[in-house]
Length: 156
Image (tube, rainbow, N blue to C red; front, side, top):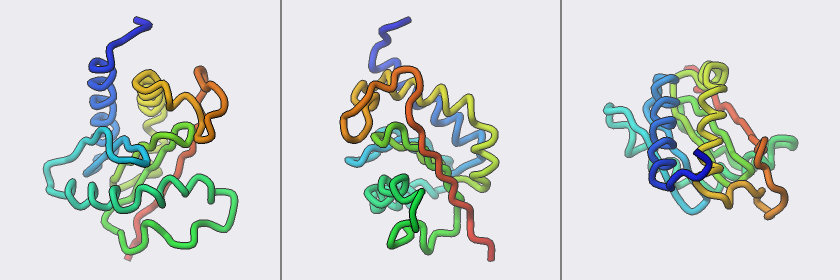
Protein backbone atom coordinates (compact mmCIF):
# COMPACT_ATOMS: atom_id res chain seq x y z
CA UNK A 1 0.00 0.00 0.00
CA UNK A 2 1.44 3.34 -1.05
CA UNK A 3 -0.52 5.56 1.31
CA UNK A 4 -0.69 4.10 4.79
CA UNK A 5 -2.36 5.86 7.67
CA UNK A 6 -0.19 7.62 10.20
CA UNK A 7 -1.73 5.42 12.90
CA UNK A 8 -0.76 2.23 11.06
CA UNK A 9 2.76 3.52 10.38
CA UNK A 10 3.09 4.45 14.06
CA UNK A 11 2.13 0.90 15.04
CA UNK A 12 4.73 -0.47 12.63
CA UNK A 13 7.42 1.86 13.97
CA UNK A 14 6.58 0.81 17.55
CA UNK A 15 6.69 -2.87 16.61
CA UNK A 16 10.01 -2.57 14.78
CA UNK A 17 11.48 -0.59 17.68
CA UNK A 18 10.44 -3.33 20.09
CA UNK A 19 11.96 -5.94 17.78
CA UNK A 20 15.22 -3.95 17.71
CA UNK A 21 15.32 -3.75 21.51
CA UNK A 22 14.55 -7.45 21.87
CA UNK A 23 17.10 -8.48 19.22
CA UNK A 24 19.79 -6.70 21.22
CA UNK A 25 18.52 -8.02 24.53
CA UNK A 26 18.28 -4.40 25.50
CA UNK A 27 16.60 -2.50 28.26
CA UNK A 28 15.37 0.44 26.19
CA UNK A 29 14.97 1.70 22.64
CA UNK A 30 13.55 4.97 21.40
CA UNK A 31 12.91 7.08 18.33
CA UNK A 32 13.50 10.73 19.09
CA UNK A 33 13.71 14.18 17.56
CA UNK A 34 15.54 17.21 18.96
CA UNK A 35 12.21 18.19 20.54
CA UNK A 36 11.56 14.93 22.36
CA UNK A 37 10.90 11.21 22.42
CA UNK A 38 8.37 9.96 19.85
CA UNK A 39 8.33 6.19 20.37
CA UNK A 40 9.88 3.97 22.99
CA UNK A 41 10.12 0.34 23.96
CA UNK A 42 11.28 -0.71 27.41
CA UNK A 43 12.01 -3.95 29.20
CA UNK A 44 10.33 -4.61 32.51
CA UNK A 45 13.52 -4.32 34.58
CA UNK A 46 12.90 -0.73 35.69
CA UNK A 47 15.74 0.83 33.67
CA UNK A 48 13.34 2.72 31.39
CA UNK A 49 12.91 5.75 33.64
CA UNK A 50 16.67 6.23 33.98
CA UNK A 51 17.28 5.76 30.26
CA UNK A 52 14.39 8.06 29.34
CA UNK A 53 15.88 10.73 31.59
CA UNK A 54 19.34 10.14 30.10
CA UNK A 55 17.93 10.62 26.60
CA UNK A 56 15.92 13.73 27.49
CA UNK A 57 18.89 15.40 29.19
CA UNK A 58 21.31 14.65 26.36
CA UNK A 59 19.21 14.92 23.20
CA UNK A 60 21.00 18.02 21.88
CA UNK A 61 24.43 16.52 22.59
CA UNK A 62 23.44 13.27 20.86
CA UNK A 63 22.24 15.07 17.73
CA UNK A 64 25.58 16.92 17.62
CA UNK A 65 27.58 13.65 17.54
CA UNK A 66 27.37 12.95 13.78
CA UNK A 67 28.94 16.36 13.10
CA UNK A 68 31.89 15.41 15.29
CA UNK A 69 32.54 12.03 13.66
CA UNK A 70 35.24 13.30 11.29
CA UNK A 71 36.82 15.64 13.81
CA UNK A 72 38.32 15.51 17.28
CA UNK A 73 34.99 14.71 18.90
CA UNK A 74 32.64 16.65 21.12
CA UNK A 75 33.96 18.88 23.90
CA UNK A 76 32.04 16.82 26.46
CA UNK A 77 31.24 13.12 26.24
CA UNK A 78 27.45 12.74 26.54
CA UNK A 79 28.03 9.16 27.77
CA UNK A 80 30.52 10.06 30.51
CA UNK A 81 29.67 8.28 33.72
CA UNK A 82 27.19 5.92 32.09
CA UNK A 83 28.52 2.37 32.02
CA UNK A 84 25.35 0.36 32.60
CA UNK A 85 24.60 -0.04 28.87
CA UNK A 86 26.17 0.11 25.45
CA UNK A 87 24.34 2.25 22.89
CA UNK A 88 23.53 1.95 19.23
CA UNK A 89 22.57 5.31 17.75
CA UNK A 90 21.27 5.81 14.22
CA UNK A 91 20.48 9.26 12.88
CA UNK A 92 18.29 9.42 9.77
CA UNK A 93 19.10 12.44 7.58
CA UNK A 94 20.15 14.24 10.76
CA UNK A 95 16.47 14.75 11.60
CA UNK A 96 15.40 11.80 13.71
CA UNK A 97 17.37 9.44 15.92
CA UNK A 98 17.05 5.82 16.95
CA UNK A 99 18.66 4.78 20.23
CA UNK A 100 19.02 1.26 21.57
CA UNK A 101 20.52 0.68 25.02
CA UNK A 102 21.81 -2.88 25.25
CA UNK A 103 24.67 -5.12 26.37
CA UNK A 104 26.46 -5.36 23.01
CA UNK A 105 25.82 -2.47 20.61
CA UNK A 106 28.37 -3.72 18.07
CA UNK A 107 26.67 -7.10 17.94
CA UNK A 108 23.28 -5.46 17.57
CA UNK A 109 24.54 -3.30 14.71
CA UNK A 110 25.87 -6.39 12.92
CA UNK A 111 22.61 -8.33 13.39
CA UNK A 112 20.01 -5.63 12.85
CA UNK A 113 20.71 -4.30 9.34
CA UNK A 114 17.41 -5.43 7.80
CA UNK A 115 15.47 -4.37 10.89
CA UNK A 116 17.04 -0.88 10.78
CA UNK A 117 16.29 -0.56 7.06
CA UNK A 118 12.64 -1.39 7.68
CA UNK A 119 12.47 0.99 10.64
CA UNK A 120 14.02 3.83 8.61
CA UNK A 121 11.58 3.17 5.76
CA UNK A 122 8.60 3.45 8.12
CA UNK A 123 10.01 6.57 9.76
CA UNK A 124 10.40 8.32 6.39
CA UNK A 125 6.81 7.42 5.57
CA UNK A 126 5.59 8.45 9.04
CA UNK A 127 6.90 12.01 8.75
CA UNK A 128 7.79 13.39 5.34
CA UNK A 129 9.88 16.18 6.91
CA UNK A 130 12.51 13.58 7.78
CA UNK A 131 13.12 12.94 4.07
CA UNK A 132 15.05 16.21 3.98
CA UNK A 133 18.35 16.78 5.76
CA UNK A 134 18.72 19.18 8.67
CA UNK A 135 19.29 22.11 6.32
CA UNK A 136 16.20 21.27 4.26
CA UNK A 137 18.18 19.96 1.29
CA UNK A 138 17.61 16.92 -0.87
CA UNK A 139 14.93 14.31 -1.09
CA UNK A 140 16.26 11.02 0.22
CA UNK A 141 13.42 8.85 -1.00
CA UNK A 142 15.47 5.82 -2.02
CA UNK A 143 18.42 6.02 0.30
CA UNK A 144 18.48 8.21 3.40
CA UNK A 145 21.73 9.35 4.98
CA UNK A 146 22.33 7.22 8.04
CA UNK A 147 24.90 8.12 10.67
CA UNK A 148 25.52 5.05 12.83
CA UNK A 149 27.36 5.43 16.12
CA UNK A 150 28.22 2.57 18.46
CA UNK A 151 29.11 3.40 22.07
CA UNK A 152 30.52 0.43 23.98
CA UNK A 153 30.23 -0.17 27.67
CA UNK A 154 33.14 0.67 29.89
CA UNK A 155 34.60 -2.51 31.23
CA UNK A 156 35.77 -2.26 34.74
